[in-house]
Length: 79
Image (cartoon, rainbow, N blue to C red; front, top):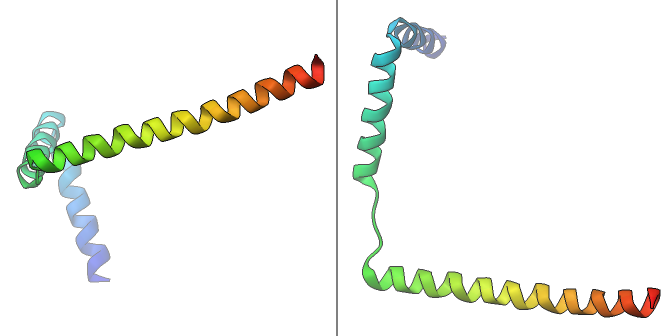
């Protein structure tokens, strides 16, 4: 029950703040979270880039093969 009461009291405190105070708190929390973000090193970024490009190429080939198969099947069926 104490947790419910605590959440209600914090909810009431949040409702008492004005629009601009809540907006300022929102941006303050965003910048606080961004300070904790761990950015990849240059080598990790290169590996991630290569992985994404290879995955996109694989999907393109996969879709291209199916497009070719269904295109030929359509021409064969509807002639």
